[in-house]
Picture (cartoon, rainbow, N blue to C red):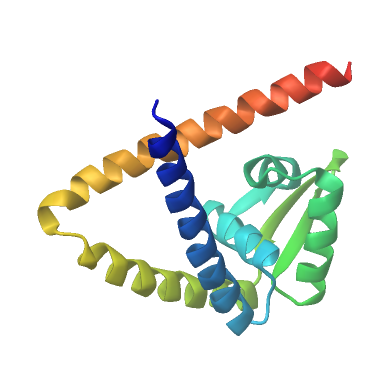
Length: 156
């Protein structure tokens, strides 16, 4: 791979991360929640009900970190915890009515934002963009998974 291409790729990724980061902060902030809470809220809203362990895995967080985020969300009335009567270590999370309203507002806001972006892409290129983006996301995910496995092995 040419160094010039690698630098261009890194520059475009930084710009994308920066631009989308501002959008996340702006949209989540307008709903009175943090970016971390926004990510968690969207995942819980998509799943309906999800275990704390599964949510932590999806978000790439340890359960103690996520548990602190959930504490704030429970206190704000966004989510509720459900303990499994046969295994009190198993905790699932679901949205409250207030959480569903915030989820719906964020979902609507992001749909409108990304609709504008997607419509700026020439129609004949949209499928190509979706396919390329899926490849990029999968490659990043595989890279992160590999790094985590290597770090874990080095700690032993």
